[in-house]
Image (cartoon, rainbow, N blue to C red; front, side, top):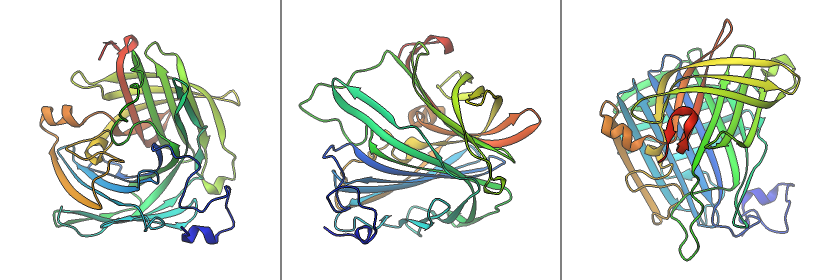
Length: 364
């Protein structure tokens, strides 16, 4: 099947662009798009998923307001034949200028949340080292990702109230990943279940200051042994400075007593040029990604066949502790960052499952 991408001089396999290199059903291409003001009042996250071997495309948009209420709209559709149109019902995503400017929109719908937001990169994208893992001899993960910091413009409408995005007071982050991805949809039947780790830590962070930005991706065993690390320091387009890779990092997180969510933290980055940078973090807002379908919430899960077309919406009361416990797992925590006298902002994702004695967790 030919698509518009086949017009371009960029083929790398003896196939058209409607197919990928493997028949693994876990093959996923995902976009994550985050915008927020620097006060912590509004925090919106949107995303798209493309699953060519499951014939699905899905999307979500979710906004947390003043730490009290979170709204989410989730949608899914049959992928083919519209395989080259990043649109799911009222959701759409457009590349305006490659690696620099994109547009993310949710048209008016019956669930009370819509937006039209442009992202313009302020620093070049950071390309992570690939993540690769085997499970009993089978590839369980093989993913590449890039992240970018930028400024947003546009508007958000929630229950009839329009919020204008002020580029001087709002910030944006995005990522784009593709490959064989853990999880998604429902487990396979007829195969031995995957290994359950005794303990595991995952953390991904992206942050910006006036003259530089940083990103990291860390995975550790429950005993603190590194399984994967990638990171870099990068600079505005106007600086002409080259990115500096990170060799390692140290972390010191403090957690809420009720859920495994960061309430403060400190990171120390060790760069390959010998420099060391220390950053402290104070959360200003939290957007709960499970509400958008990560790992499943209220009958919607990324990559799960929902029929030829599906859309729904949910509203969460974030002042209810039981609601928060039910939706918290992979949380986007927007923080004020401090590095010496510099003040910046960024997103931290942090998940600890099972045993991690250093932070007081002894099991599931």
